[in-house]
Length: 270
Ligand code: MF3
Ligand code: CO
Ligand code: CO
Picture 1 (cartoon, helix red, strand yellow):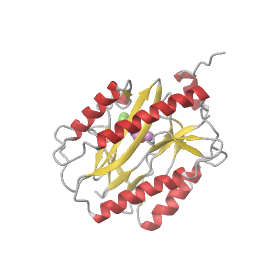
Picture 2 (spheres, protein in one colour):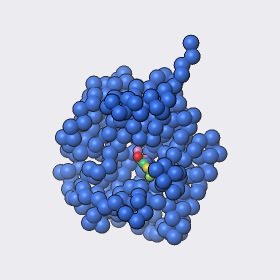
Picture 3 (tube, protein in one colour):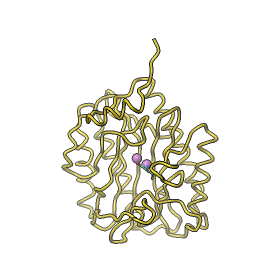
């Protein structure tokens, strides 16, 4: 017997019925390969972060490397997104568009978000980088955001509800005075860049779906330094999301697989 993977139409059909696609063994192996490639591209692109480099140069490096390794950049032309990665500097929360004229300078912090398509499957991961010298408050924001992502991932196991991720993240961040972005969430991922379920990072979201082995989704909290969760969507470029109060924002993201016992991180290098 040979296995035939579900078509995008199958997944869309499940999505419209509010069901979450459970990946087969073959699909999981492809997700592992895609996740590894995304992690490699993110790590190698991050090595290019320094003062004087433009975010477009980071984009072009990531794009070329992805192609050389046999993958494609998922953001490019996704719902009209014009570049191959997202680069979100300082008060940009997410979906920053790499630009020739955006030159990194000392003290900047930025999120680089890499999503690749490999063997028909997506791997999605992001993390923070910075140009020294790093302000103490910015360092603390990045550290607390990464910790929050791991606290969320620690909730991933069979039978847990998706809402438990946001409950745990919120219990950690809100007492520390941060604002957790509500307008954007983690997401199921596979043959599609974004599929069911949505994964909120705030408490009491009502995301009742129970995790099952073979589900794949991202955990990717966006955290604002001011206590405010409000964000502004740039109407002109259609993409850039910034904090409403101009405060710094940080984000970390991994693609996770629900296993029989807990979580396997698909976008981690050993
Ligand atoms: N990688 C982002 C995420 O984590 C999505 C970017 S959509 C794009 O879901 F079009 F901006 F690339
Ligand atoms: Co994502
Ligand atoms: Co992403």
